[in-house]
Length: 130
Image (cartoon, rainbow, N blue to C red; front, side):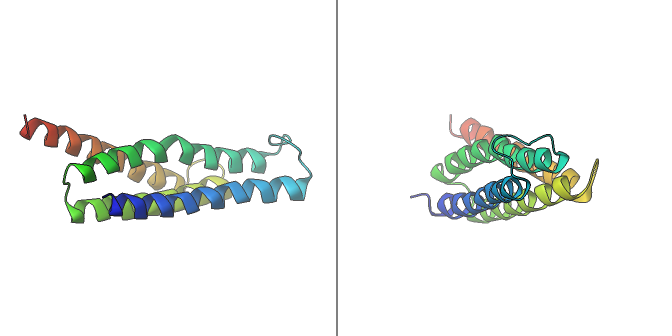
């Protein structure tokens, strides 16, 4: 059973809904039917959601494989918590600040480190079980 994956997939799904809601709220307030309406704010909201859509699925796939293969409970919760943190601070930094920001930089860095760690953990697990 994938109890830990289910927990973090659900939390990350709520974050994705929050990001989608921000786009809807922007479009309604600016009366934009589709797209960003040429607004820099709209572009930022759309990119914040798109960025999460780009990274969350592969992370959850690697996470689930690691859990199925008996990965460490502590490692799973550490990576899961870091991923949730990263996926919250990234859009906050991306939408609120033009250019480099704490949230955007560290949200991206932590996300990449989570993916990298899970990839290496799964490769290591494969190698030791040959």
